[in-house]
Amino acid sequence: MTVDEELTLLEESVRRLKIEYDVYFGGGAKKPPADTEWRVQSLVKKYSDGHKMNFAQRFKYNSIVQKFSLYNALWQQKLKIKEEGYRRPQDAKLGIAGMRIDQEHAAAAALESKGETQEEKAFRTSCSDVTADHDNVERLFNAMMAAKKKAGEASGNATFDSFKAFVQKKTDQIRKDYGCHAVEYSVEMENGQVKLKAKAKI
Image (tube, rainbow, N blue to C red):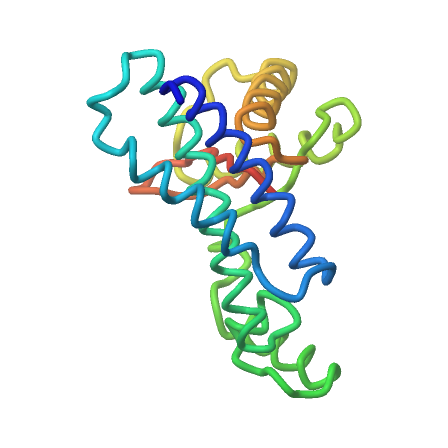
C-alpha cells in the first residue's frame, strides 16, 4: 500500500472511529471501539517521523493527526466521566456523584458563588450558522468590546459587520477542518490582553 493510500485509510479510520465513539457514548454499543482506535494509533505511529512523506503528504498527515488529537482528548474526558459514573461533565468537577438532583443543583450553585466572579468568567457562546445565530454573534461582539473597554484596550475601527464576517469565515473554516457541528467562541483575558478564542464543539 502506498503512502497516499495509507493516509487515506488513516483519514477514513479517524472518521469511522468518531462514528463508533458517538455510538458508544450514545448507548448503542457496550464497549469503546478499541480495535479501530488501535488501527488509527498504529498508522499515526508508523508515519510519525515523517521521513517517508513529501511535503503535501506531511501536511495531510499533520491535519489528520491534529483532528484525531482533538477528538481523542474529548473521548478520554468522556470515558473518564462514564467510568466514574457521573452523569454530566460538571459532576466530575463538583465531585457530587450519587447525590440527589436537588442536592446537585445546590452544590453547583454553591460552587459558582464561591468560584470566580461574573466579571472574571470568560464569555462563551456557540455558533454553527452566523445568520441563524445572529443574536449569539452580537452578544459575542458586545462582550469583546466591553472586555476591551474594561482592559483599556483600543477597539480601533471594529464594527459589528466586520466582526460578523470574521466569525463566519472562522466558523466555516473550523467546521470544515474538524467536521464539527458548531464552534465555541470565548472572550478571555490572557496576559492582560483580550483574546477571542475559537474551538471545535463536537
